[in-house]
Image (cartoon, rainbow, N blue to C red; front, side, top):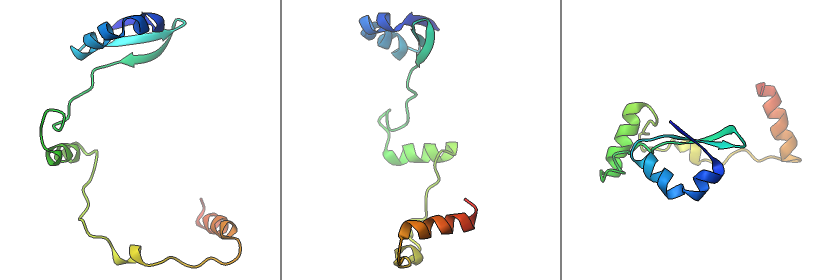
Length: 100
């Protein structure tokens, strides 16, 4: 891993980005303290020209997302209860009862 000051990275950004694109890593220092790492972006199937479905399938395989069934439960579409008085106070009281 290369280490470089922020001013040097700013002056030679194209060179550092090219280095990172080819698999390198750069730690950026601000006044001698590590502030950031420049690392290559990992390509997803969509980045490699694959379909969005293939990218979603890959994310699902890795456990990052979980696809839904595509059906919306009817209860979600029903209107909620009408709040009378101070809605915020009712919300706070409900949260306190729930132990939040």
